[in-house]
Length: 161
Image 1 (spheres, one colour):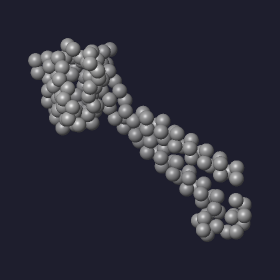
Image 2: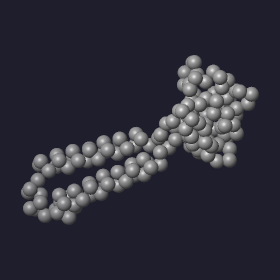
Image 3: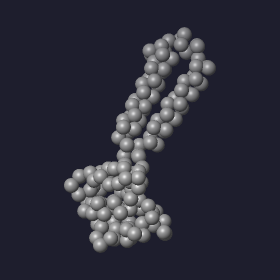
Image 4: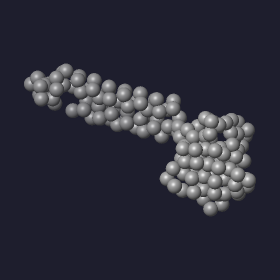
């Protein structure tokens, strides 16, 4: 019986590891609000002409690509997400999120901005983690039943339980 509890514990540990990895599937980076002007022409969830490099407050490059989430902090709260379109004209940010939220503000009133990018490396690790958890469960089940299914297990295996 102790082995069954240990196996369940291992399974929960794998699920915990997968949950931790999944939480890191996005990387968030601050950007200068003035850099939002470079996103003018953003359409259908992607910058015009492909990924755009903008600057962080510490002047480090941050890439904005398709499926990026963009957030702006205004005096009234934080707005944004996945944008369908963005226009920046005469110092005014005009955007519409994919779920229809309109965000309009002068660039000078935007207190902070950030980009949330899918972290593809972490997503690959999550997939590998799930595959490892499934493989471990299958191997444990095969060893616990002596290579037979539960209904086909020899009497000696069933007596051990």
